[in-house]
Length: 202
Image 1 (cartoon, rainbow, N blue to C red):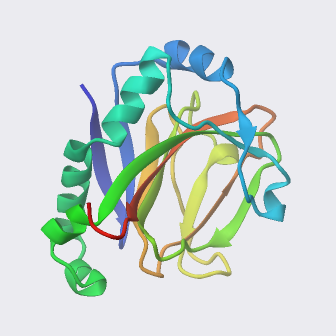
Image 2: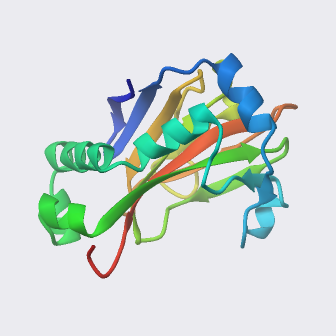
């Protein structure tokens, strides 16, 4: 029913495609009708242009997508993928895959970035084992993209495509510098996904 397909494009970075049984024509009206709010504690550079929805979700597609992204099944598959494909992943985090499973949770938040949203090149904070995004945009357009770089100066960019269901995952280990924006005149809908450390263990 749901599946994430991975294509590695840089060390610790994957272009992904999220297969789901929902069309954009079905999903976007559900999103537009929701009570969006400005992201709490957002940095000044966002200028209140990132809006977020919090669960619970009542509409069928949003509820189903959120439940799958937060499921133990998805989290186990994701953790196994990282341990199988990232050299030294276990040593860097100091735990085997079963311990990682006990000490993390997966989540997915629906996001609306208004025209003019800008996220400067950065790395994520250490509690995030991995982060990603699934685009709910209509086609591939650099105006909606996130790109990954070798450093904070933006050298050697790798742009992620933005077709409906495209996106990215990256393992957060200091190396994956990235930034993105909405340089279009349309609202950019997406799903922010993450694998986050949770202490104490469940």
